[in-house]
Image (cartoon, rainbow, N blue to C red; front, side, top):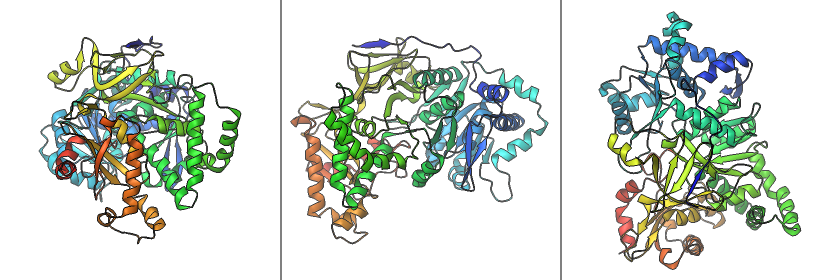
Length: 600
């Protein structure tokens, strides 16, 4: 199959505004609890009545601050309740939210602020304010910077806006809100910049409305009142916002946190019914559990449990597990799987993965332990998911089938093309890029894929990331990188070999699992990686992981040589995007000498 289209089960009103749900909930379900906030270590409920009042009050402050219809207001903050409050208030005031990652450098913020012509910038902390001070002062259209966490002797951004808006009437807010149409700009989100300068993706209220409606249709048993989810991905990322909107529209209770270090404690306290994450987090959960088992002398039990979970999940798609497999699964459910489910709060029924390929191995593992991960596919340009696996239609390893109203097609060169109500109409002030990405009514994703006979979409690589060796062999690096990252010792992998005689790789070691490995091998805590690179036990373990990975590809695609770097790739060093994807061009530039050494 080369094309699939799914009929649209909903309509998008011409006057659709994403802020409408705020005031509909206020009228219809004032005591609904759409959000919970962590205050002094305890979760505190926010009712629909209170949220609407907060949104209205902040919108008044934005209007009083001179924000006109269509003006851009930027948010640079970690994931927290105020992010969502400000987002809905900006829409209520007729503005457009510009999303900036809290990890953005001054140079990155400068480009976004200047290119978007942002009028007002709201940052989270004094550190953020200091980081962007020079570029904020220089941005031509930027009139003011407010801070969510109050600076000494000043009001926080929310309190300041509420105070400013005291003289603005409800009627003025309604007048502004009613100007919003489905084709009005709701947000500008700048592409992560894995290659080239970030482009501003303009998404409309209609795009988000369509995304929310399609998500709710795809997850009818999860997107219902009474369910709970803990949002920990960056709200600047379209995936987090799309699920947040869908949950709010469905009356699901959402809590927010940006403290990843205490995530398991927060899961235990909040007890989410479903979570969403990027694949790297699922990899870390798996690797941490495996490492903990090995550190406790139970590595063999974990390996058998993992193999059983994967086999059990695979059997689901092949006629169902037999009696023997069911018995083994039941034993490991008590020994291992139950503990993994408890670590997510004990109430988690499912997870949703996006942002990068999950891989069939992890998909089968988590489904086998009783936490099915429904992988989807989308880009900023598609308002997040446009294909997704569901309870009734799941094929592990695929990214699911198109959502309601969407279509997918494979071009002659293998590129995945998309259509749908959530697909953007163009890049901000960049006609050339828009014309290049939207042709003949189809959005060209840049990803390579295939569609099976049942309409499931598979991502097989990225056009710009395909490595062509000197021998002319085309190699998709993701297959090798995903398999190698499955090893607990390995944190990140970059496969190289473009125009080279063979495939090589740069590896980094995981700082969270190294202490346990050092202890098991009788080495002092804090042994520098420079010394470990000569350790025969470590090299043997990595060699074995590479050899196992190479069994998954042809000889021409196999990794012949690798180098272990002394430092990990991080967001702070610019080698990873905020959603933990590799910035390949940056890594190639920073580690050119190490790559050259592979081929010397």
